Length: 168
Image (cartoon, rainbow, N blue to C red; front, side):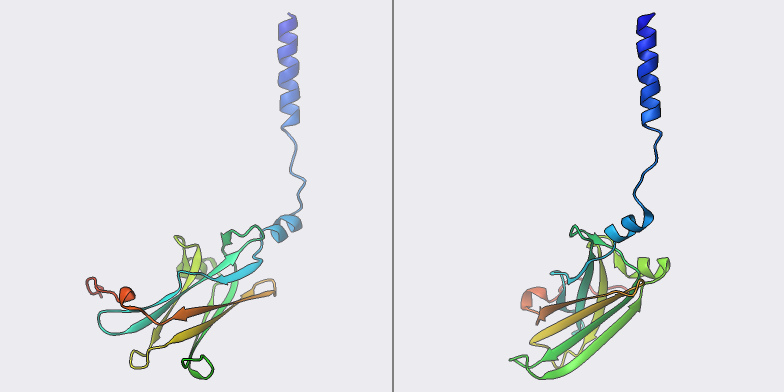
């Protein structure tokens, strides 16, 4: 009989102890896991395709306060400037803007493998860049803006794509 009373008491205390609700406010949860930093990912590179065209693939990544990649809502702006050997004079500039404020657009531009947004730009193969300065800006839906800078080097022979031509 005492055994059943103890088992009943433990069961009752367990059930009452687990019935509470979380006390973290919506505001604290939203602020804690909102983007805090923008980086130009090291996978960003230039590539020369078999048809001779030159592309720059830039990976832009949002990080939470713990440094983990995450998605965000807002507007992405990427600006690529190509300079001379000393990177002093701007020879060409390419810009790309993308709205990722809706679920559909966000999924379209987000790469789940690298956990980053991918920007592909076609460059002029007749004037191959020596070094390119990348500036990225993410205007978040809450009004904050995050920015980052990176550098892309010219494609080396190892980065020239030699596989089969892409299917159209």
